[in-house]
Amino acid sequence: QQQVKQSPQSLIVQKGGISIINCAYENTAFDYFPWYQQFPGKGPALLIAIRPDVSEKKEGRFTISFNKSAKQFSLHIMDSQPGDSATYFCAARKGGGADGLTFGKGTHLIIQP
Amino acid sequence: DSGVTQTPKHLITATGQRVTLRCSPRSGDLSVYWYQQSLDQGLQFLIHYYNGEERAKGNILERFSAQQFPDLHSELNLSSLELGDSALYFCASSVGEDTIYFGEGSWLTVV
Image (cartoon, rainbow over all chains, first blue to last red):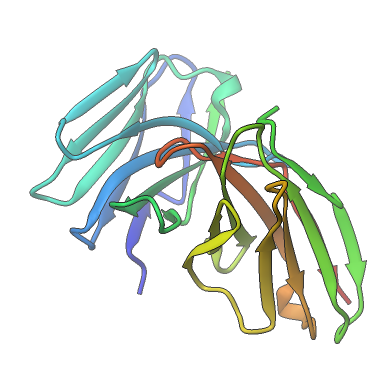
């Protein structure tokens, strides 16, 4: 059972454009939703995270939009740059902090110059 | 650099063998998590230790075990290795509930 579904699998965006990656979750016990960025040969690095009590969080060019009723959240990368080319993972975790993160399958993002 | 150190970076071993992966968390972090990343399964949570005690188990096989020592470093032991165990194994650490920092991983190849 895939508890966090991520789409698309791959995405090509022109430099300066907006990259949008979507995730949907099933478990209503999830209360923490981070996005991770991973470059080849490196570990995932936390990009931005949100809790369900807010509908949007922005940090620089990165924005998370969260729709609790639809059980969906998305990552928007504004003014996408070639250096943003990486694999992006959404994740979710149940409250309490004991459980690990449940990850989506990842999106391979390519920003074309 | 996340501050999480994993060794070895690469490991090649034969089926049926046993290996140990080591992790040093960020200074001050009490929680250590282990994850497995493979092409078919993606990133999967294996196990979480907090200050030496097991807190939660994920999709960890019975052939795998982990422990966290008094100095907070952790080891993941993989035994009776199979070809399908070939993957990238990540250690991650955190001081609180939220921000989890990942190491650069240990590449395990079983031949």
